[in-house]
Image (cartoon, rainbow, N blue to C red; front, side):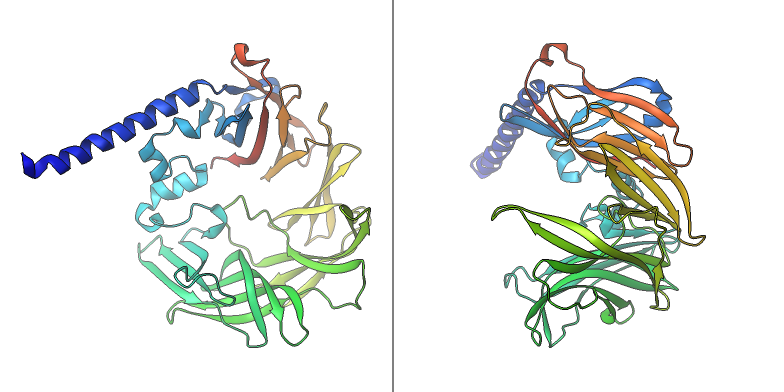
Length: 414
């Protein structure tokens, strides 16, 4: 018996901890309200694959939750083991975990760290030597490649090439692409140029030699150099909504280069306005850049939100309404212009929107107990409202409490 007393003590302690976890979880969840979609007009089938990632807080008590057609599921409702296994992931990531469990083991569950096509699933994530602490230029890419057909997996880590004339102090992977069987990665690098003694922000295109497990510099994309100005500067960025989706095959990457002017209001506040800009597409196969000529109907204030095949989607807030413009790069024509008016949405609330296929999903980004949270699904080409509804609290007894609800992302199941 003496030989087992440590094991008995360990099991008892584990049962006590897990039991306390479930009691605490049950108590906390019982105090949280239930939310639901309430249909005003339209086809309820439009929300069958819709999930909102959100969070709720009231008097210091809150939790993250998912809202879909089946109701509300709080993070605290998942078991301890479900949380470890990552059950509360976005639908796309749940599919990858289910279909490619061995390959997904130990990988980040961030969608934009993955590229997927019919034959390949590719994972790329930034890492560095945590044992030595953070050091400039000390970056590596953790790369994993799964051949869906042969089931063959390739995994390795490779250091980012170092330029002796500059020092990278931060970087972010923003593009994962397979071009003619080659893996190309685009990152946004923040570095210090030793020759000019300036901070530089640029996009670097890397070519990965999978067989040799090495990374090579292929191209660099930077903003034009202008004469120094005290209140103007240029910046370049990739046009995409990479934070939300698994990356898909594409041959061209669209960039926006803007001339930004700063207006100082006081020592604490400034405003920024794009006074000039140009868009160009970068051919991943040839490395060539081509300017995209925009019509006058698209103002400098129109934000290039996303690219889908040959279509660029621009969004603009005009007199409290969301204006969406679709521009075809190949035909050089405007495909559609829609203006979506959502009543009773304040400037402080703002919009959360997602373009998926030929539809746009629009919902306010935040609400309190006194504000409405309407949901609109609109067809991009026809302008027809396919669904109009609102998010309501199901618990009547909790209707009068003061609370804040924030929408973090709009997800659509495949």
